[in-house]
Image (tube, rainbow over all chains, first blue to last red; front, side, top):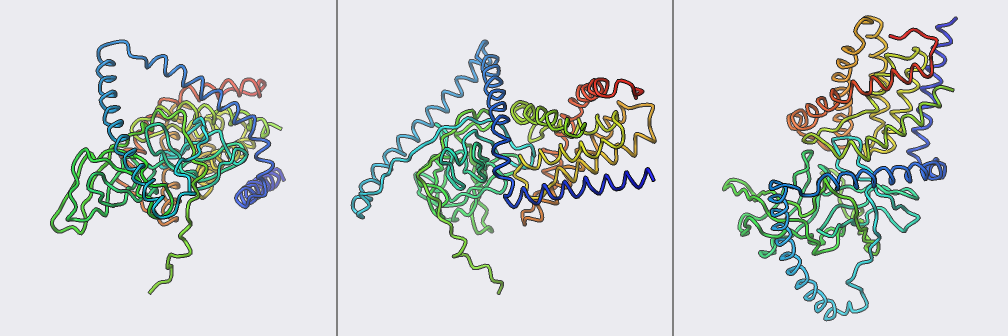
Length: 279
Length: 166
């Protein structure tokens, strides 16, 4: 009798869990979840900010090793600023072209919404962050996310007061890029290790270590000319169709605290144009 | 009633993990203190409570994670069941059992995650995962296992003071 009661309890638990999962995935619990999550997100924001403060205190340079590291960081900053100069030059070129093509009414400046990084995806297989801005703040799925250094990722899931952002280092992230100064186009993918890998670079293209990697805007998922990083290695094999390589991102993903969501960029959904029929 | 109490405990653990511990990885490995607490709690608590708490912990993780399927709920229920089964066989060395199940649990979570990701059509390199995700995660979980075991022990004393301590 007792074991029958135990079995009934387990079945009830299983059915309840299954019900919650189905309701959650189908979106019926959204209102309940947003209300219930508000204090939790506030608490997580507070914990995250306090932790960042403590981390910053302990990571302030105090000895020669740290000063050397700081020096390396400043050198990286110089490289970044050089990239920014090129980026700004490109922007002015873009403005001229936009005027020529009668895109004068389009505003090349993006609108940003600042957000704090309050958490990271619990699974080590995925590279996602959680930010404390959601649909109540105008955040929508697909919006690009940047930091003061460069591209961070894009919004993959939104609830009223928080959002999940897929980082460009995530293994399932794919971005159309161009390499400056050769203006070669290619694809940038993430990996489980968080490395950025270049692919689909034509064999005849000249790509060197240190070249800048920017978004190309192709595919409509990201705006063009956002800095991603610098080429850190190129692999060219005679028998391969394309060159491959690796990229050193300008954003330090391990220390992300504040990000900016570009709220006036609408990603283009090209799914209906893709041919999914098998030959 | 006690199952309801699991909710705030797991939420606090989740916030600690997501906001603090996940910023201190080893390579690409991350700790899973909700899994560790589930194991620790299962080794201490009455059998009737264990699976319920595992489900609550799993649901919180699945809600926060971008993984498509309820990987954590399934994994935690398997891990809690395994803990229940083994705790009956090896009662004398609960801390050793905690460490052993932590290792096995990490492998179970990663295996189910790997299958889940593969079902979405994305194949990850198994070799890469073992070397840079699973082994560092096991190491981190072993580091956190003893303090979490202590936490579960203290909580058990608080909630079930009349019962014999394992």
